[in-house]
Amino acid sequence: MSDKEYKNSKSDRLLCLLFKALKGEPLSVKALANEHNVSTRTITRDINDLKAFLSNYRDIIGNVELKYSTTNHCYTLEINEDIEKMQSLY
Image 1: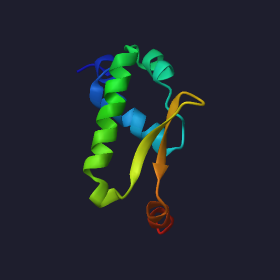
Image 2: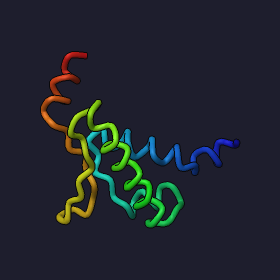
Image 3: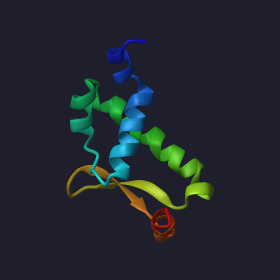
């Protein structure tokens, strides 16, 4: 797989979304679609997949979820206090 193919792969996009969210960056569907040269529908599916992943592993990572803001039209990662406390231990 070439670098260009990898950068456009679903796994790369999902990791990019996750790392951006973990850094506290808002996730704009339009901006991400432009960045990855895919449709907004593709990014919406990726976000839904990431939301499902976070939900499926809630017993391990706690109440972490992507929330949509109608104010800025972006998704942001919401982390409960227990996770923040665990992160401060490292």
